[in-house]
Image (tube, rainbow, N blue to C red; front, side, top):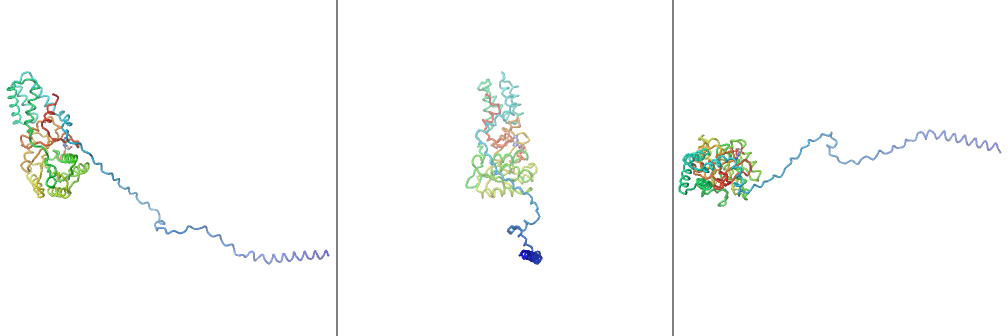
Length: 383
Ligand code: GDP
């Protein structure tokens, strides 16, 4: 029985080995396990072609910073002459103090009157005007028997104010009428302050609630149009300009046309101011006026005069009055001269009212001219 068991075990072992031998090759030939699926690929998204393209850095274009223009509020014109009085008085000190010192002398003899005359002439009042002023002053002093300094000072004040024709109309015709803008031509030699004055007048008008177009008809001085545009930009006025060297008359014409079309209140035309003794150039100014007048009459022609040029400036001014009908004078740079008497000479010799005075380079340093305030400032105003 035991031998049967052993035989059975051996047989089972043999069978097991045989089975393993048979199955082993099959097991070895089993196809390899399928490779695990690759990691989930990202869902293809339609990519723009350039996403695959090599990175080329785009130049950084900085958007221009557009700053809202800061529109200035010009100072009101009322009281400007008073405000600028100190500036005027500073440069007039010699004149005013000198005159008052002479009149304060104990004895007003011929010699003293001669000195008064000399002082006035030195201050650019002009010979004829000086004679007239001193003669009247002497006469009044004699008749009234005044020899007090205060009395004489008052008389001198009266005479100077009188010499400035205080009743003349000094309004600048720069406001619209008959449904069209007022047209103002600004003329004068280069450097007198024309462009600056145009800018200052535009500010005054805008301060008073008017709308303004500026015409840059000084096409010969390269910087003039830019200068005018800067002035205009500060107060929100429009500028009409042409290319450099353009025909000034055509720019002036376009400016007025634009002003009429836009329905503004005033058109200010800055003109070329080359030396007036060149006949051709002055003819040109005449042409500007004629061409502008195709739109209607010019309302105001302002002659800008540099107060520091004295009698020489007066000679130049005369030529302008022959070419265009000057209706008012703007005397600039009064802050820079001790010869304020030029105002009297200008008005008397040209017979044209001084309407505005320039008392500095600042944007609001332009004042309506007032004879009484001016004379007060001229004499020092401390009485
Ligand atoms: P334009 O050639 O006649 O147009 O003259 P500008 O307007 O360019 O002025 C010439 C120079 O005079 C500039 O430097 C101005 O700033 C200066 N100017 C104008 N008006 C006055 C003024 O009233 N006082 C002073 N001190 N300078 C002034």
